[in-house]
Length: 333
Ligand code: NAI
View 1 (cartoon, rainbow, N blue to C red):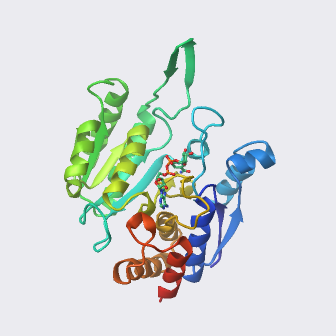
View 2: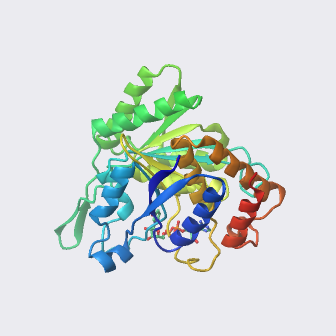
View 3: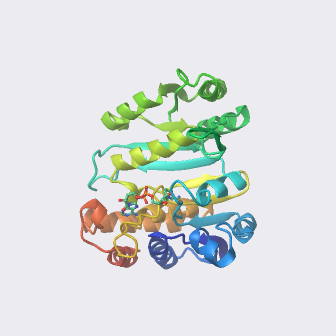
């Protein structure tokens, strides 16, 4: 059955990795129709706003979106489109499975963990102001509602996916109220899920342990900023930002996007690895019930990368984005 989804190609390498991803999933028989929407600086130039209402309306109507990265101006300019979409559509859970594929170049060969990041509050509320010249404040907002919601999501996910353990990360020794509340909510949910082992780490110690023995971790649940940073750290454990996909999930809608950004340093050069967005699209296909299509794509990816050793530059290979893409299309069975 044909399903219509919202498509936000984004900017930088966004259009390149999006085109590659659609080429592969269409060839695999995903049977999707795409409602294309502009967001970011191009939308600002054309429509006078970086996030037109039409984008949110389209996602709300279709319930599912595939999104390329969108550049956010540093230190000035408009607020992150990514953060706004997550907050406005209450896509409270950011789910990022991080796993090593045996045979692929990566620092570790036995990583299989999932980062669950709270997506709606923390230090990403955008509540910043100048107190007096030379003194500025950024407000970190932690609520019982959102902390309980993300902890419950992490435990439910662990139960559903047959995972054994959920580890919360925090800095409750310093931020006693905010991170303390996050930790309390996590512990309350842990009591309600006795079948799943629960523990916690101070965020700095977690980072150290992740780079030494990442194979010991299973599901991680973190507030927004820690989750953002730890996601990139974990991507580095298994080959880099070019290989980790993700999903932003809410009660009503889901937006699938890679962990990486718009990579302006390689944009337009046919060098980007489309695998991260492709993996996000595979998560989307599972979400849409098109599991067979996702499995066909995964089998082709493994054949091309592990057996035929066709790799993009970020993984030490020499294939361009389009060569890698066409190799996967040819490998589809
Ligand atoms: P980035 O993730 O775009 O790039 C970091 C490094 O990883 C660069 O050297 C880049 O070339 C490389 N890289 C990233 N994705 C790659 C891929 N698919 N294949 C090969 N190499 C890849 O992070 P950066 O440079 O800090 O951010 C650039 C822009 O992206 C910023 O404006 C930022 O706000 C935005 N951003 C957007 C996100 C989104 O739309 N979800 C997420 C993260 C950042």
